[in-house]
Amino acid sequence: MNGNIDSAVNSGVQANVGMEFQKHCTLYLFLEKYENIKNEKYFIILEHLEDIVFGYLDENELLEKIETFQAKKSTNKWTIGKKLIEIVKKIADVSQSILDDEINKNDNFSQQNYFTTNNTIELKKTVKGEIFQEVINETKNIVKYSDLDTNIKDKITTGTSSIKFSEINKINLDNLVFNFIDINRTPKAQLEQLYGKFKTVFGSSVEDPKASIDTLLYYFKEIESKYNQGNIAKLTDETKRIESDDINKILNVFTTKKLAYTFWREKEKEICTVFNISLFDKPTFKLHYLNSFDEFKDLKESEHKKIYDFVLNNKNIFQNHVTESDCILAFYNEFNKKKTTTLRELQLKAVISSAFVEIINTEL
Image (tube, rainbow, N blue to C red; front, side):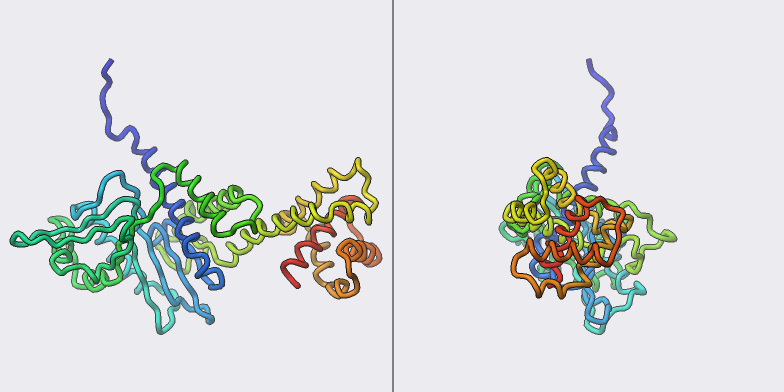
């Protein structure tokens, strides 16, 4: 039976797939950059001035550099036509918006504006039988607009009957970069690729790459879904930003969990012995121990925070002990002398042990 064909029937699905691509692309770019930016102060913005924005701050909190990404998935090769010209014009407009934005910039401020896609970009013009061509794909994944032949530039900036480039647009196009990104086409395949890439970047320091990726994507979705305040896109709008400090905290949770599992495997017997934990109570103790690493970050968990702060503020105890188990027991005894808690004894022992592991690996 033949039904009526409606080309818009999958428009909602296609839009969602496109949005997934942008978030996955953000994470892919982050992982690509991580080794170079991990010690920098930066922020990431989604669905704001552009699909993706990476902003880098100097030591005085002034904006030093901006990278924007117009990220588009495509099943077809890109050529110089209305769709590509429209994208390039928007990128030129965004470049000027960044210059006009009220955010404080330092004297060396610079920006690069990328058109990023997972399919080939073919830029070509024929003049009197001579072909001028630039192809951006997996063999040459970055091409600056400023390096293109003049004939190709002219074909782009001639525009269309409805798309016109101003002289300011043409100047701002010097910041444009065409970028092929080698990311899979379906959301499922993209996620599998990201899990593998995360493991490559962080190696064995993270226990669960899948959980790490899913958590970062959750936070990306949170900022993506926030409305631009006053319907104006501003780089200073903190509701649309995730800061490097926040990302580092997220990553530290998963790194610490890896340390927690490793420490438990190596020291389980010693800890249970020094605390006199029975075989019956061991599974419960372990559960409290592992859960504490998340609860230290939860502002509602005041008892966990109090215990963590106690260990942190009494780091001198580390100097007085040779073995981990004896040191943990000393923290426990000292806490009971000076503090009270609503936690039961078994849970207190577990939380003290967790605080010990996190602080010895992150604060000493």
